[in-house]
Length: 286
Image (cartoon, rainbow, N blue to C red; front, side, top):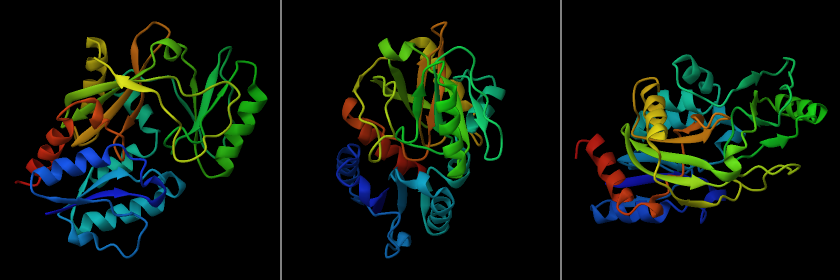
């Protein structure tokens, strides 16, 4: 079987997951390649399965990306499937998680045409609701309301909803905990160091440079990750990455879910790529 690990031209050579996952499929007797989702010459029906892996520029034109994904899903098996993609590619899903009782970083949404309200008395972050790799995310001091307003208005002018969240200082020491969940079960986790510096401009390229190391998640982090995955419409998907940060009371809360094209950090967990490849094949019935 041919396995498509969908990417984009700008991501070639940057996806550290590609090599271990391709080797895993090849060890199981299948051919893996990395077609560009934007390439109109690709015959997606020639793949037995297409996995979204490093399509990291989808945020530039989400409607076009979803239309492409729908076309792929009509001719072959796509993971994650369309209902998951439609729900998870806009961070307004955080409000759905909160409504389901999952703890999240406090989040407010400003749609184009709406007035942005400054958070009271604390540092804050504004990012596009459709975003990846920290692109368009900026950190502001508590007094920088005018700068925050300008950034929110800029995102709105570009057609994005602006997502405003407090900057939680636990990330400076504890970092983020990213938990990889395969079919709703915990696989492995990593620690990400802090990304957003005061006064920094927009991220250049597809993603901000990250400091990564393996991490054993705490019991309360595992609990929140499982609750978050269980709250995904339609149930636990094939793969999910749950990014957690600790709040001012040191309780874990969801910063974001990555269900479309997340880095899964296979190199930080031996045999995780092979485990994932086997799960994909089991979903296909073989």
